[in-house]
Length: 389
Image 1: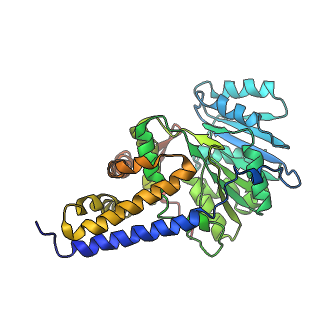
Image 2: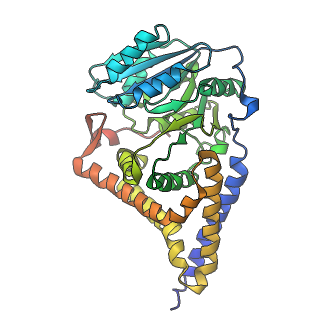
């Protein structure tokens, strides 16, 4: 069967785009410093003070391990503020027990009521920041695990690179093939909207990196950004903050750190999809048309190449596309530890991600908003937030 006359042109267009992305990533990813290397095993110049802020709601399963990993840090002048954000489980009690064992090192704050006009997480982080007096602030999550030298290495690199905003990429803990399959897909997909190796280029305003698991800010830069008060209703507060850093001309720096900081996203592929439900529609500012365009793009760039293998006229560009995708999986996997072999399942991952996109949209529209940290936020209120320009 002959292919429609326009398909070869389309197949070659997709192949050229993938090859360009693979070549660009091969060059760019090698430029990002790996702070696990021996030359980065240093003490931060001037030994600046650091306060780590850990907001948590109903994190009784993970919070003890997270805080203990922070208490074991070999970084001088480090203190921790843990925020119990309206938890209904034992989160607050676990925090208090650890604080009693480490007086002066760990402080616990309790949020009992969420003020109107705030998301829970942004309010908890802002609340803690008002109680913090230090040179640097590190915002993280209650399920993150830190190697004992993690904060010292990151702070040393932030100081050495004169960073106002320093981000390092956490290493995912993979407990099932489904998790590895979908997270491997996400790490390659993430190379399309932004180029992390250009985050330090002030002219590349579209290239910024924000990661809630590790957001290190110079305290003066945090205040200059307006704190989290400026992002009260932002579900994707990490990305919004990162973009604001670039727009305001502050210095953003990114590093990779395989194994230094770890996170387990969720159990299984469907668990990962579930975690993304509140986030994916928000990426598109809750615009249906933008999300559907993204779905069409993913179908073309990830699923169509498999179909292109069926016709002789499109088979060569399809093979080239698949080779480029495998190369990107390999490049990204060197940093994340996710096996390149998950590339063989990328069509399944793409289909699951499409399902996640549509699920996020449908659930949000059906409910008329998003439920996050036990609070319902109407869609009209979320949409009323103007994107940064």
